[in-house]
Length: 171
Image (cartoon, rainbow, N blue to C red):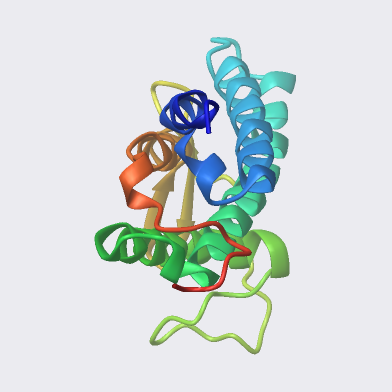
């Protein structure tokens, strides 16, 4: 019983621990990859660092999607507003993850899924801030902005947003 304040303090520092220790470990990996991407993009001279940023962004995209997908599959563990945000983020990440992972478009009206996507998983441009820009099905994805969006999402999850752990049955 005396450990409860310490446990709650731990959950306060890392709220997703209340959902899943494995998710927290995966998120920490994602944060390390994010640091590598940003460091590579912050190099002002194009060259090998640009390809390093691309390589790591590819892995980051797959990892971010899988973490969010797992959370969405367990949406009853989260408050209704957070569950809705999880689903919206999963759908957004799917638009870039599908071409990166499967070389197919995600389920989107008007985009063919029965043929290879072409150059959609290739860099369409490099922003002034060295951000990698991708165009997929007419939508533009700025790597730096997407990383920021996902980072903000995870930082915004509070302990009270998590109703129970992933493996715990509903009350």
